[in-house]
Image: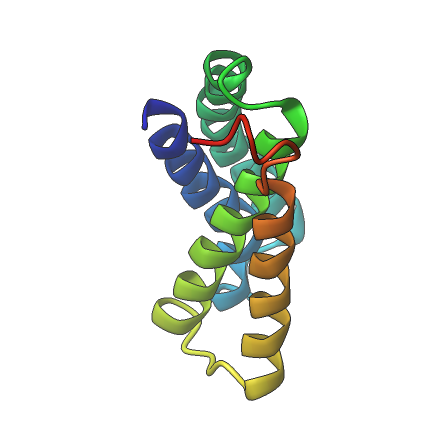
Length: 115
């Protein structure tokens, strides 16, 4: 659970770093880059330990796939709550397909060992 919580927190920071400036387009781009880089530092302070501590329980591939789903969930909430964008049906389908890909990634390769 620690890994998942760290991944959620790191994705919050990264989403803010990458997309938070979209509501502040009058701010000089060089300032936005420096501020975003500073915010991204905290993302790395959470992402690296999440991957280090999570590896072994999960494979690197599973950690990456988990991170991508968390990223999409965080991003969707951010778009809706902060950027005031609406989710279209094709976005929902696309996200659903990504979640299906995650299910396949975590599918037991040897059902006899599952459980």
